[in-house]
Image (tube, rainbow, N blue to C red):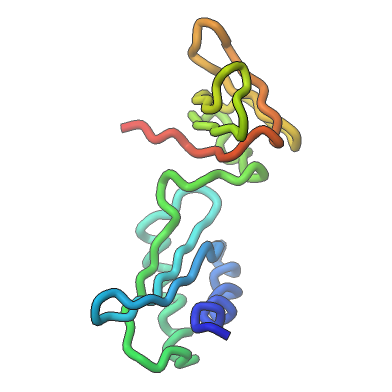
Length: 152
């Protein structure tokens, strides 16, 4: 088994207990350094405190298991603020501005931005600011990705 798989097996259960999902594990060499990159996620945004908490949890587990025989840097990160939103997690984003990319064009567009008005297991309804359309209904089968629109 590869190091990243061993690390995943070791840390994933502990992360789950405290409410984090393990999105990815990479063990790579950058220059002279080896880096163990652990990518976490959770429902909603991942804060800096979440990163620190995950590090405090993961580091002693890795030290005790001693899976990696060479020195390395532990890099804990998140998917970022523009992470894709899983369809089944949409309840957390009601009344939020979303960008929805489609697999194929619907009403001559393959990207919609709007406020999530409602959803069910089959479709979402986005409120639009367009003069032509006030809302659009998109089926889950038509959707490629959903992301939160970040406003600065």
